[in-house]
Length: 371
Image (tube, rainbow, N blue to C red; front, side):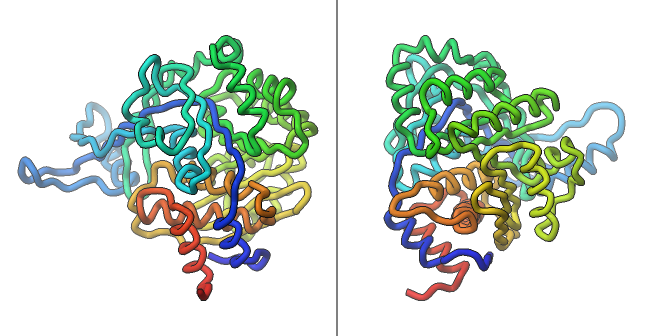
């Protein structure tokens, strides 16, 4: 992992001393992660389907008719935007506030790991996401009724609405996801910015997730709205390579993603959208464009044997949100991307997000910093 436009020692110092308040909303998902068995030899011994392509080839070869493969439960845990991104921030001892659907009146046990290190505010019952996990990716099948029906009017009727609005207003960074699951997103963000969070120094960070789930017209309408709201609060849109490719194509730009051409494409996209930052993160690099700081691109070494891939993008977003805090000082754009990349690199190779010491060691190892 490298980039010529940041001070790695400065990132280490920033991680050591960073502080501030990060608020996240508005979802709550329980993940059930499954693996698919190719063949079983005994009751306890079996071989897994390792790659998504392998599964796809099996389905194509089968042709018409049924296709059956045994699955086994790998884990049941918190998931979704607030769960995964919140844990990435909480691991850095920043004690984020998470607003979402975690269970009413009792919180689901899937969120127990978050309780001691986050301020959880539950406004409903969680959705579920069934995930088939492979070495090279995942197939996600969300059951989202509880999220799709969540609206601003419902939030405004919450008994703790005053506390929620105060937290949003006082947060240094406000992160919202996923747009694709929030049918009332435009109404929610409009009220948040206009009524509570109108501050030219406050930053909103968005993860839209599955762009194909909503119409192109919906997407362009939301982006136009964010461009207007950007005049009151700074807006950052974070995309993985698949989302970035689709967004390029929606705006008439070639959808291929590589580090040699992505900067020029991001500049063209940025002009069409009009928000402060647009970021694309991939397993091999992160790149972005900023109104005030221009274009930045940071490579990272792709993990060839990932321990865990589900939640990698959320961990990038959590690392990036932490990097956007301005205490003890503000990192430059490349430095923020490098810090988020390091958080993701640690996550996929270890299976959990790093704490401050682990993130610092990841930075030091990447850039061969001496003690």
